[in-house]
Amino acid sequence: MDKEYLVKKWLLDDLTDEELNAFKQLDDYTTHIKILEGAGAFKSPVDSEIADINAFYARINNQKEPTAKTIWYIPFLRLAAMIVVLLGIGSLFFLNKTTNVETQISEKITLELPDASTVTLNSKSELAYSKNKWKNDREVNLKGEAFFKVTKGSTFDVITNSSKVSVLGTQFNVKNRKGFFEVQCFEGLVKVQYEEHEKNLPAGSTFTVINGVVTSSQTQVGAAPNWVNNMSTFKSVPFIQVIKEFERQYDVVFSLEKVNTSRIFTGGFVHTSLEDGLKSITLPLDLIYKIDSENRITLFKNEQ
Image (cartoon, rainbow, N blue to C red; front, top):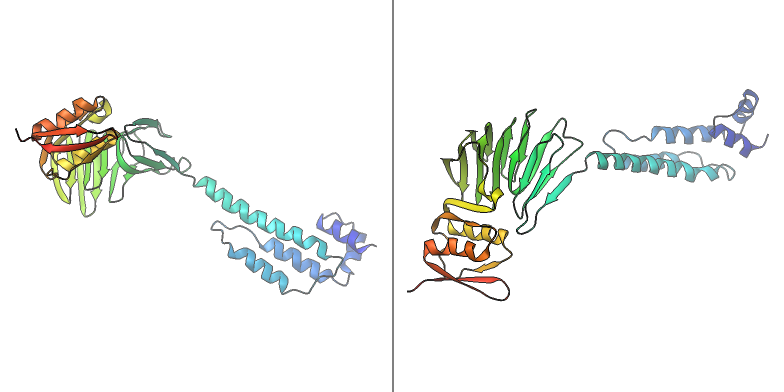
């Protein structure tokens, strides 16, 4: 019988008993068996390693060289091996795919998570989570500020670069900016882990860290942060934190060369009127302002 005909039927597992006996009599029968075993041994484990395909090629290269009539199918085996690897890597990629949401200056976004919990992102903030893992792992990564309304269920974790906030079902706000970290609990109970600090916050409590200094205070029960309603408010914070928040809510840049930005400020500003907002943050500190054509705001000490 024709050798190529037998090899093709053997690869298709379609040999009759007579043809199988003839195939076993081929002088390179052993080579065919080793090549197929090598391809069968190459499979994508749970932790796929690209090194597996190199091992497969090494195994093939160490075997007896195939004859000219059998070499035609080796590229197909290698292609099949590559497909296995790519499918394994692709499946891991899609299973672990992360959803990312980001807001721009003066933008706020409310989104619904897979369990019907909701998150409102303040301006210049980022949120990331995995939909595929959500059923067993309710976890989000946050940069910036967000207000959460969490449905009851398994533990819900908010991860920042220096903290972890855990709840079962509640409403709370997390603000994570440079030099400023704060968690406000409006409903339920929140567990805060910030570096070496750990604290349980009942409704109406606030945990704040400003430039490494930890403080606790009270907040209004059952309410929501004022920024959700387009107003930023502050209580005893360095003026620089007010300036940075103002820049996030309006597309402006401040010139602060002659202003003491470490002064403590209590008050707030609206997000809907630049002029009204500027008056709210400058008058209490006896400052005046000037706006140029590029939306650069210079602050001065009022000398009058």
